[in-house]
Length: 93
Image (cartoon, rainbow, N blue to C red; front, side, top):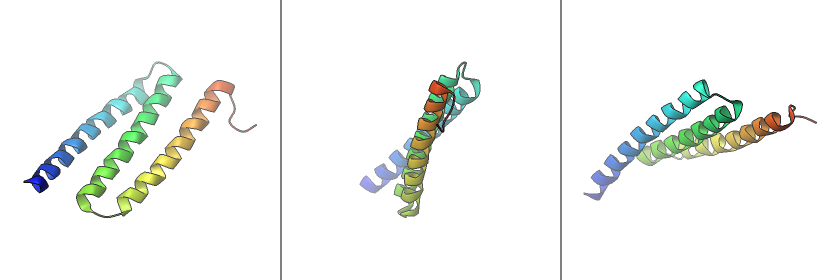
């Protein structure tokens, strides 16, 4: 019973995360300002990371968890670089 419940809940989480990724991609493509697009991109990488984590839970392999860690690190750095670019107009001083 609990294994079936876990499987169905992971499937539901993956479907909802896919829907959230679609909404974030829509915000990136149709955002009226650059700040909205940066927030959409930030949400997109967090949702992608969570989707990889749910794939890792379903499959039981550690490869998905490592890929999610790499996405988290690269997403944080890219968000910080984009925010600095929007604030000052340059990334490297």
